[in-house]
Amino acid sequence: MGDLFDFDNLLPELVLALGLALLIGNGLAWWKHRRGETPKDVPDAVYRSGRVLFLIAVGVLLTVWGAVTLFD
Image 1 (tube, rainbow, N blue to C red):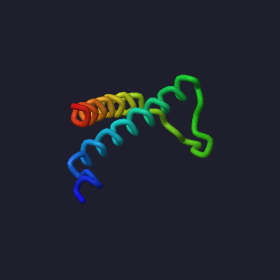
Image 2 (cartoon, helix red, strand yellow):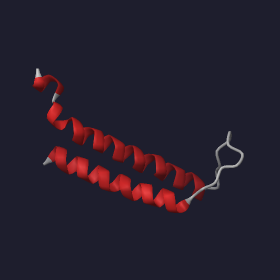
Image 3 (cartoon, rainbow, N blue to C red):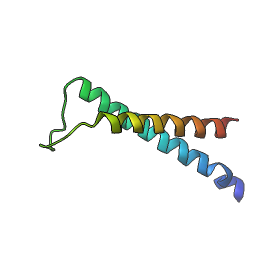
Image 4 (cartoon, rainbow, N blue to C red):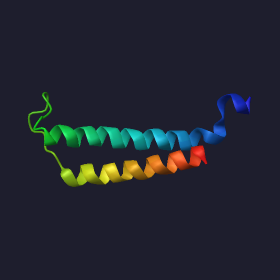
């Protein structure tokens, strides 16, 4: 039963998914800001470049850690 759910790889898979979500989501926000697009439903949207770059860096670290753990 343990092989069916593979609980040994669950944490690295979740870390990899979280890292990819941070990387893709903030990368998309950065790309849209560079193109001059703003959110349509948010009138007072503020782009914080420091937060976006920090979260991209965290996403890269989590993605690398999760991928190395899974594929090692």
